[in-house]
View 1 (spheres, each protein chain N blue to C red):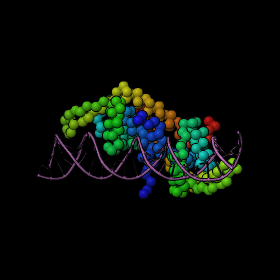
View 2 (view 1 turned 180 degrees about the vertical axis):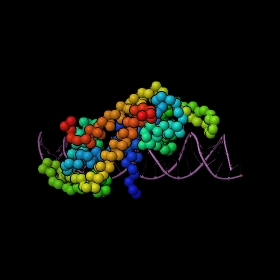
View 3 (view 1 turned 60 degrees about the vertical axis):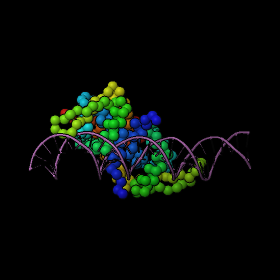
View 4 (view 1 turned 180 degrees about the horizontal axis):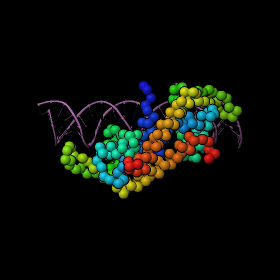
Length: 115
Length: 115
DNA sequence: TCATCTACCTCCTAATGCGAGGTAGATGCT
DNA sequence: AGCATCTACCTCGCATTAGGAGGTAGATGA
């Protein structure tokens, strides 16, 4: 009954932002997306499969991502994801939300309203 | 069935940080805590009662806050909250978590691993 | 044949923000 | 007195979502 890590709660809502971010410039398949996020974040984030795949499906259902199956030389088939125009817009929205949110927290934690 | 605001998800896990923050220097009662957070964040955050009170109770149960009832001149009794040493430590922990988390997101969103 | 690796997937649980609803005292209007 | 309104507290139930556990399937190699 130990309280869960703070991190786990903070993560909520950021998965789409992170996924869309790493797909901004290239298409990638699931496992690769997780790896990219881990790399880019310097190991700070490592989305588990239990949260990554559902998030990918949700983004695809929303029309933010487009995907197709491809054979692999060495292993099971892969599902490659690519960002759509709609996904680009969603990414912009997420970035803006995040920026304003982070600003709000910083401002609140920093000190009194004074400014 | 419109998708919930991104903000609502991002908020998860930050309530303790925000509450402890506004209580760092003064004692306050529930309503006042919500107002302070609203003020300090420049209106960005306005925790609802449904999330604020449970959070206060959890922090109190954890020993991070100490509270007592006091009469009010003009209205119902108020429950004043004050931060404990343990709460101070928890605040520091939350601040550190937040800082590292925000850094991770910024780094990931900013650009490729290069650096 | 069997272990191992990659890569996909889903089910269930836990955490938590919020809306809705509820209690109660004080004030002020008619 | 009766009633609305404001402050201030509280709880219940829903929806979202991260993650662990578990499951499928193809390829490789001992």
